Figure 1 (cartoon, rainbow, N blue to C red):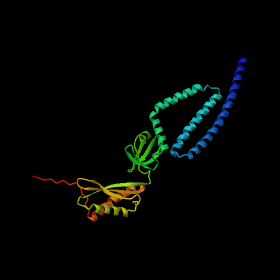
Figure 2 (cartoon, rainbow, N blue to C red; figure 1 turned 180 degrees about the vertical axis):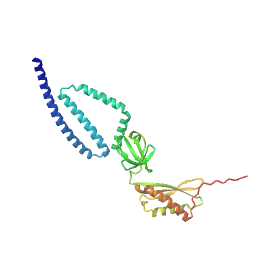
Figure 3 (cartoon, rainbow, N blue to C red; figure 1 turned 30 degrees about the vertical axis):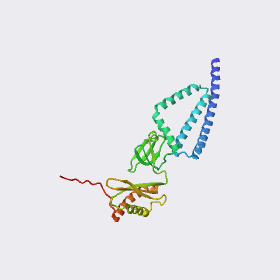
Figure 4 (spheres, one colour; figure 1 turned 60 degrees about the horizontal axis):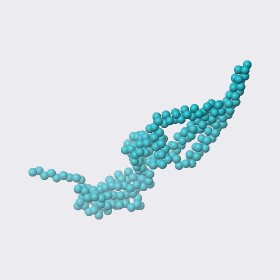
Length: 265
């Protein structure tokens, strides 16, 4: 009889703990949902890239759930110290096993926070050139001009030089033209300037510049520096190269090419 009474007392104690644990579970889930909404609104007001919001919210939710589980186990009078130790050991093992992936995650955070480029930018990095199609927490995806998809680990991107070709509103076009030594340099410069003035995409400010860049073996090199809006960079560069060649032909200005004279004895 005494044994039954002890069992009844223990069940009574456990029933109280179970009820308390259920109450904590319900209240905890409500609080987690509320905290997630607050965190989501707070992230929406920051300048962080939207790509990182989902990851931060997921990590935050996992942490809240872990805390809730520990509290519930405490209500059930389950020793939590061993659990915390086990979770710490598991976390260390996972971190060691995913060392490479974690470095990509850390690099992804830095890319999304510092924003050396954003989606839609045309960049050169890791030996590849392309439009940024996606910035994930572990990798960056580029779409090349010949329609290939390049997936780069974020750690490699962050460890390499990054050239963002579209971060500024305007870009300078640099083109070199070779003319014969017998050609009139002043006239050739005027022809190039006239071509630039007629091109609707070449900006008046900053001013276009044409100057002698070098004295080559078979030509005098004239360097053109013209400014355009960034979206018009590539098309205008092709246009200017074609238009200057046609203008030189019309003006009788020779564009020399390397020649070799062979004398037979």
